[in-house]
Length: 144
Image (cartoon, rainbow, N blue to C red; front, side):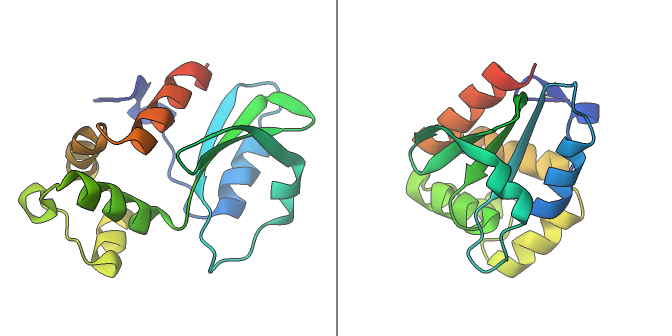
Protein backbone atom coordinates (compact mmCIF):
# COMPACT_ATOMS: atom_id res chain seq x y z
CA UNK A 1 0.00 0.00 0.00
CA UNK A 2 1.25 3.48 -0.81
CA UNK A 3 0.60 6.49 1.46
CA UNK A 4 1.23 9.82 -0.26
CA UNK A 5 3.88 8.32 -2.50
CA UNK A 6 5.57 6.53 0.40
CA UNK A 7 5.75 2.77 0.79
CA UNK A 8 5.25 1.06 4.16
CA UNK A 9 9.01 0.67 4.57
CA UNK A 10 9.42 4.44 4.16
CA UNK A 11 7.09 5.14 7.10
CA UNK A 12 8.30 4.73 10.66
CA UNK A 13 6.11 5.51 13.66
CA UNK A 14 8.60 6.69 16.27
CA UNK A 15 6.09 7.57 18.98
CA UNK A 16 7.64 10.72 20.45
CA UNK A 17 9.20 13.94 19.18
CA UNK A 18 12.51 13.00 20.78
CA UNK A 19 12.57 9.67 18.93
CA UNK A 20 11.62 11.29 15.62
CA UNK A 21 14.43 13.84 16.01
CA UNK A 22 16.89 11.14 17.07
CA UNK A 23 15.99 9.04 14.02
CA UNK A 24 16.48 12.05 11.75
CA UNK A 25 19.85 12.92 13.33
CA UNK A 26 21.22 9.42 12.70
CA UNK A 27 21.10 9.96 8.94
CA UNK A 28 23.06 13.12 8.12
CA UNK A 29 23.49 12.41 4.42
CA UNK A 30 19.92 11.30 3.64
CA UNK A 31 16.90 13.41 2.76
CA UNK A 32 14.52 12.91 5.67
CA UNK A 33 11.09 14.36 6.32
CA UNK A 34 9.70 13.82 9.81
CA UNK A 35 6.31 14.68 11.23
CA UNK A 36 5.51 15.60 14.83
CA UNK A 37 2.70 17.25 16.68
CA UNK A 38 3.10 20.39 18.75
CA UNK A 39 1.41 18.77 21.78
CA UNK A 40 1.42 21.61 24.31
CA UNK A 41 1.24 19.08 27.17
CA UNK A 42 4.62 17.52 26.41
CA UNK A 43 8.06 18.99 26.85
CA UNK A 44 9.83 20.37 23.81
CA UNK A 45 13.03 18.42 23.12
CA UNK A 46 16.10 20.66 22.95
CA UNK A 47 16.82 19.23 19.45
CA UNK A 48 13.82 21.25 18.19
CA UNK A 49 15.94 24.39 18.64
CA UNK A 50 18.02 23.28 15.64
CA UNK A 51 14.99 23.81 13.37
CA UNK A 52 13.66 27.06 11.92
CA UNK A 53 10.39 27.83 10.16
CA UNK A 54 10.69 27.19 6.42
CA UNK A 55 6.98 27.52 5.54
CA UNK A 56 3.65 27.76 7.35
CA UNK A 57 0.09 27.33 6.11
CA UNK A 58 -3.25 26.55 7.82
CA UNK A 59 -1.53 26.32 11.24
CA UNK A 60 0.77 23.56 9.96
CA UNK A 61 4.47 24.42 10.05
CA UNK A 62 7.30 23.12 7.89
CA UNK A 63 10.62 23.37 9.70
CA UNK A 64 14.10 22.88 8.27
CA UNK A 65 17.20 21.96 10.20
CA UNK A 66 19.55 24.93 10.37
CA UNK A 67 22.72 22.93 9.69
CA UNK A 68 21.28 20.35 7.25
CA UNK A 69 18.83 21.40 4.53
CA UNK A 70 18.12 17.71 3.77
CA UNK A 71 16.27 17.39 7.08
CA UNK A 72 12.77 18.82 7.37
CA UNK A 73 10.01 18.43 9.90
CA UNK A 74 6.25 18.94 9.55
CA UNK A 75 4.67 20.14 12.80
CA UNK A 76 0.94 19.66 13.30
CA UNK A 77 -0.81 22.12 15.66
CA UNK A 78 -1.81 20.75 19.07
CA UNK A 79 -1.69 16.99 19.41
CA UNK A 80 -2.11 14.62 16.48
CA UNK A 81 -5.31 12.93 17.64
CA UNK A 82 -7.14 16.19 18.28
CA UNK A 83 -5.93 17.58 14.94
CA UNK A 84 -7.26 14.53 13.09
CA UNK A 85 -10.55 14.74 14.99
CA UNK A 86 -10.94 18.45 14.22
CA UNK A 87 -10.30 17.82 10.51
CA UNK A 88 -12.84 14.97 10.53
CA UNK A 89 -15.42 17.10 12.33
CA UNK A 90 -14.86 20.01 9.91
CA UNK A 91 -15.45 17.69 6.93
CA UNK A 92 -18.31 15.84 8.69
CA UNK A 93 -16.56 12.47 8.39
CA UNK A 94 -18.33 9.58 10.13
CA UNK A 95 -15.47 8.13 12.19
CA UNK A 96 -17.48 5.21 13.53
CA UNK A 97 -18.34 4.23 9.95
CA UNK A 98 -14.61 3.99 9.23
CA UNK A 99 -13.94 1.92 12.33
CA UNK A 100 -12.12 4.82 14.02
CA UNK A 101 -13.53 6.00 17.32
CA UNK A 102 -14.02 9.70 17.92
CA UNK A 103 -13.05 9.43 21.59
CA UNK A 104 -9.47 10.70 21.70
CA UNK A 105 -8.01 8.18 24.14
CA UNK A 106 -9.45 5.16 22.35
CA UNK A 107 -8.36 6.54 19.00
CA UNK A 108 -4.80 6.98 20.27
CA UNK A 109 -4.81 3.41 21.56
CA UNK A 110 -5.96 2.15 18.15
CA UNK A 111 -3.29 4.16 16.36
CA UNK A 112 -0.64 2.55 18.52
CA UNK A 113 -1.85 -0.86 17.37
CA UNK A 114 -0.81 0.21 13.83
CA UNK A 115 -4.18 -0.35 12.18
CA UNK A 116 -2.89 1.20 8.99
CA UNK A 117 -5.87 0.15 6.84
CA UNK A 118 -8.27 2.18 8.99
CA UNK A 119 -5.87 5.11 9.14
CA UNK A 120 -5.48 5.02 5.37
CA UNK A 121 -9.27 5.18 4.97
CA UNK A 122 -9.42 8.09 7.42
CA UNK A 123 -6.59 9.94 5.66
CA UNK A 124 -8.32 9.44 2.31
CA UNK A 125 -11.43 11.14 3.72
CA UNK A 126 -9.41 13.97 5.30
CA UNK A 127 -7.51 14.81 2.11
CA UNK A 128 -10.12 17.45 1.32
CA UNK A 129 -9.14 19.68 4.25
CA UNK A 130 -6.74 22.54 3.55
CA UNK A 131 -4.41 21.45 6.36
CA UNK A 132 -4.24 17.92 5.07
CA UNK A 133 -3.66 19.11 1.50
CA UNK A 134 -0.65 21.17 2.56
CA UNK A 135 0.79 18.24 4.53
CA UNK A 136 0.34 16.01 1.49
CA UNK A 137 1.95 18.63 -0.77
CA UNK A 138 4.97 18.94 1.53
CA UNK A 139 5.34 15.16 1.76
CA UNK A 140 5.24 14.81 -2.02
CA UNK A 141 7.66 17.72 -2.50
CA UNK A 142 10.23 16.96 0.21
CA UNK A 143 10.20 13.17 0.61
CA UNK A 144 13.24 12.78 -1.68
